[in-house]
Amino acid sequence: MKIAVIGAGSTYTPELAEGLLWEAESLGLQEVWLQDIDAQRLEVVGGLVQRMAAAQGSPFEVQQVLDRVEAIAGADFVITQIRVGGQEARILDTKICLEEGLIGQETTGPVGFAKALRTIPVLLEICADLRAYAPKAWLINFTNPAGIITEAVLKYGGVRAVGLCNIPWGLKNAAARACGAAPEDVDLEYVGLNHFSWVRRIMVQGRDRTAELLEKLAAPANIPGLSLDPEFQRALGLWPNSYLNYFYLQDEMLEHLRSQPRTRGDVVRELEAQLLKAYQDPKLRSKPKELEKRGGAHYSTAAVWLIRDLHLNRGGRHIVNVANNGALPDLPAGAVVEVPCLVDAGGARPLAMGRLEPHIRGLIQHVKAYEELTVEAAVTKDYHTALLALATHPLTTSVNKARRILERFNEAHQLGLAKT
Image (spheres, rainbow, N blue to C red):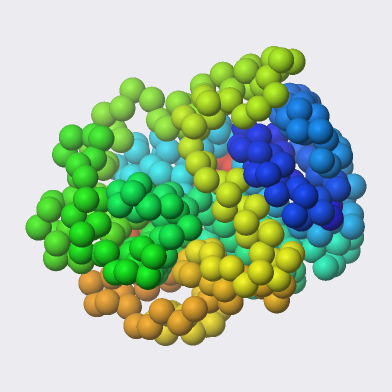
């Protein structure tokens, strides 16, 4: 097997490499090709991955290349984890939104929109390379906003693809810790979109422990004033993804973000600089503990087990981003959703999850409409479609603000949006 990692200069890559080393024998993994457009970062991160492999007896060969086609050619799996524009674009977009009194968060709302418009054209170029040089490959997308990117790939990329996020694994592990069980004993009935999801039921070794665990898992937030009201949580009757605080506590989250001396992008940029410095240590031969501060926990498990079940036809159950195809009847068939799927050599098949509860149905349909428009805007580069997408998002509180930030995004990132 050959696996290509596009965007391998990411500080997440050692996390992924750790998982690949665990499963190298069962996968028959012979080659891991690391590709990035930043030669310096690739050398630093790739060097650590090579030392990690050597420390485990080099179960696979590690190659570092700048040429994307060379990395992709003949691959069985291609993992995308790119950040178009880097942290600098993220920081700029966040500040533009905060100046307008809008929440600045890179995977949801206007900042996520700007990232999607920068990223979708590049992902579709990668898809073109797959069609030409690795037509049988699976594309595993970890690039955020993962649901929107995956929808663009499935609608316009012409390749086999599954979108991946570590959040479902994080929720599963949190439930396991709360009841003293192993993660593999926990099964979640999970519905929604990427970074916009709810857990309906928590099953532990076949037993429904939802009511008990919802009480335990509804812990106060680390930031005072940013936890959901207990009575609201009881009324909800579901376990909400933490990203839903941007919607349920919009005013409080905006106030918190505007009060911070630095944006999250500034913090991450500093963390990445520290990690890259640590990665240069020739004595370092394993994933450093400091990587936990960057986020991305369980990424290696989620990615490698997904690849394993696709490759070995295991029929495992995974919560991933796929075309709806009736799993949630309240959404279009081609809309990408994040739901439990059975995964085997034929792909990831979503399980039927039934109708959405009224108190989440409208929210999901609202955000999905925004996602559909965002994909269309990125592909057509139509200014008015982009404006409609931004104005449609629940976190955009004014169409006038939508127009102003769109103008700034278009100019700052040279998006090429045209008024037709």
